[in-house]
Image 1 (cartoon, rainbow over the protein chains, first blue to last red):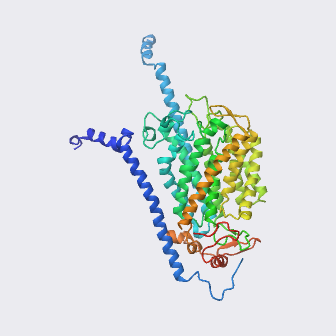
Image 2 (cartoon, rainbow over the protein chains, first blue to last red; image 1 turned 90 degrees about the vertical axis):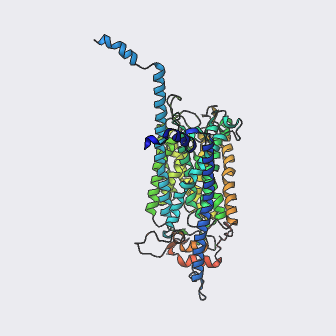
Length: 78
Length: 492
C-alpha cells in the first residue's frame, strides 16, 4: 500500500505548506493569518459567552426577589 | 602492533574545525536545555498565583478566580507569539531604524522575532531562539497574573482576558524592549539598569493594574459609607500561603532565565544587558532577599501572615533590579526595607486612597518595582551597564521610571474605561452578591462541605456576618455601588 502512495512528492508539498519546511512561504503566511484571525474571533467569543451567562443569572436573581429590600427593613452595618 | 594502529587513529581523529563545531553545538544545546528548565520551573509561578488568588477569594468565587489564571495562558501565549515577541525584537530603538535588520546592538534580531521567521519553528540550525522566546513568554504570563489577583471577585473574565493580553503582549514587552535589552534606547543612552526586572515586569504590571482598579471600583461592601475599609476573609489562607511559596520557588527559574549563557560566545554568565555576573550571585540575592523581605513584612504588619509572606515577595522585587551586583548584606537590608514599604503602601492604598486591591498587588509589585529601580540608582551608581558600558546613574533610573509609569498606567486606565463604558468591565451587582461561580459555572466547588455564613471584618475589628452588610450596600446604591469618596465612581 505504501509503495503505491506517492509519499515523497506528497510529503514535500505538505511540509512546504503546513510546517516550517518553507518558512516565509505562502503557507506560513496563510497559517499566521489564520491563527491571528481565530485568536481575534475567540476574544469576541469570550465576551459573548460570558455576557450571556451573567445576564441570564442576574435576571434570574432579580426576578426571584431574593435581593429586594424588605419594606420593614431598617438597615444593617454601616 | 601498536605502531601499526597509529595511522588508523590519526586518520579517525577529528580535525580542529570538527572539534570546534562539536563544542559549539554542545554549547548551544546546553543553552537550550538551560532555558527549557527555567520555563518548567517558572510554571510554578502560575500554579502559585492560582492557589494564592483562589485561597484569597471567598468560597463563592473560587473557580472564577482560578479560571483567570488558567485562561491567562490561553490568551497571552498566542498574542505574545503573534505580536509580542515582534515588539521586543523590533522596538528596542523606539522605532526600528533599519527595518528587520534592527537593532544595531543585535543586528537582525527584529526579523528573527516575526511569527513566520525561520527561528520561530522547528529549525535544526537554531537551538536557542525558541527557548529564549518561551522564557519571555513565561514573563508575560507573570505580568498578567500580577494583575489578576487585584481584580478578583468582581471583574468579568472576558474583560480581564483583554486587559491581560494588552499588558502581557504589548505593554510590558515594549518596556522590556526599551529598558531590558542590550539594544534598548534606555540602556544604550542612559545606562538604565533593571537586571532581574523589578520595574519592567513587576512595577509595570502594578502601574497597569492601578489604572484598571480606578475604573473597576471596589467590591460591594468593601467600604462603609464613611469610607472606612472592611476586610473580606479569603476562604483558605493556607492555600494562599502555599501559593506564595510556589511563586517563590518559581522565582528561582525566573531569576535564572533573566541571565544569558553560551560558553562559546560569551566568557560566562551575562545579565540581559550583556554585562557579566554569575548565577550564584543572583541566587544569593534572591535567597537573602526573601529572608529580609519576610522579616520586614513581619515587623511592619505586626505578624500578619499574609503580609509576612507578601513582604518576602516585595523584598525580592526591591532587590531584583540590582541582583547582579549587590553585596548580600546590602540585599538583606534593602529587601527588609522593601518588605516594610509594601506593607505601608498596601495600607495607604486601601485605607487612604480607598482602592480595593484584593491581594495588595499594586503595593507589592508596583510600588516595590519602582522602589527597586530607584535603589539601583543610589546603591549601584557608576556600575557600567550593557555593551556600551554606560554607567548606572540616579538620573538614568529616573528616566526609566518616568518612561514606564505612563506607558503602563495609561493603557490600563484607558482600556478599562472603554470596557466600563460598554458595560463589559464588571459583573452585574446581583451576580457579585451571589458569587461568580454559580453564574459562570453553575456550581459550588466545595459541594461536600456545609455552607456557613460568610464573615466580614468591620473597620473596628469585629467579625460579623457579611450578608446584611452586602445587601445594605447593594440597596443603598440601587445595585450600582460606589465608594463614598468617589473612587471607582459609578459602576458600569
